[in-house]
Each structure stands twice: as C-alpha cells, then as structure tokens.
Image (cartoon, rainbow, N blue to C red; front, side, top):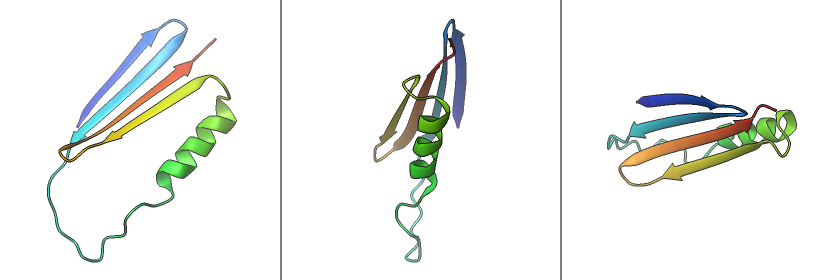
Length: 70
C-alpha cells in the first residue's frame, strides 16, 4: 500500500494505491456500501469542495481525494 498526503494551500490531496493480489473466493460479495457511504459523507461535509477519483483496474486500486480547505 502506498499512501501520500500533500498539502498545497488551500487544498489537501490524499493518494492511496494498492496492488491487487489474485484470490478466488466464491462466497465473496461484489460491491458494497462502503464507497457509496464515503461519497455521501464527503458530499455532506465538503459540498462543492472535494473531488474523489477511484480507479479500479486489473492490477491496481487507486483512490485520489482532493479537499479544498478554504
């Protein structure tokens, strides 16, 4: 897991990246409420002051969150 936090006034940028490992689990559920709940909470806490970018590709999962502090 790679985690970077950058502060460039007036914005904070959180970058998280994780390499995927192939594990097969037939009982694994797809999807969930976690990302949806996070998006809703960001909308409520930082209306028009945030940007969430999620990239889910075959070998890597990346999240970039930008929040305007001013």
